[in-house]
Image (tube, rainbow, N blue to C red):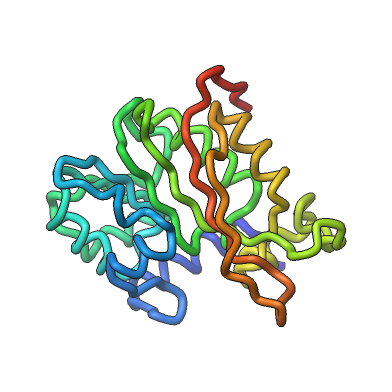
Length: 215
């Protein structure tokens, strides 16, 4: 049986090699900024981290607007269509400390395990400047009391990540952020799918003034 780790390596390598638009985000910068509620936070002198490269369209557009762009993705093949001016890494631990004005993650968290998301937060939060913002899209259940079929405990993270249905309750995500030394300063939950019984939520994360405990 294919494991989550097997899928993670093979699926995204293939998707980027084939530029599979059914798996990779192909929207431009406008769609990202509007969805993540940050159009006013992008300044010409900004240093911005883009998590989940997709087809590369939005990173290329971002590089034309701001001083510095970094890309973070699970596979090195994600950098194939990026200009050399964009710094790229597959390892969150490579990110510089106290560096970014803004970090952006759209349609990434629902695809990754709790373990991988915690590792990402543990590096992205410290990489923010003191007034920096990490805008992250995630999925949460509409009903706070609804059983998640082990999606929080994630006994079957492969299946949930493969189908982009990793759900996280708001309190659960806040705890993960706190462990990474951050705090959720704002949450937006206006995009509701009653058919799937989920909220396409946006969290704005900043460094905590009191610090945090890294796992």
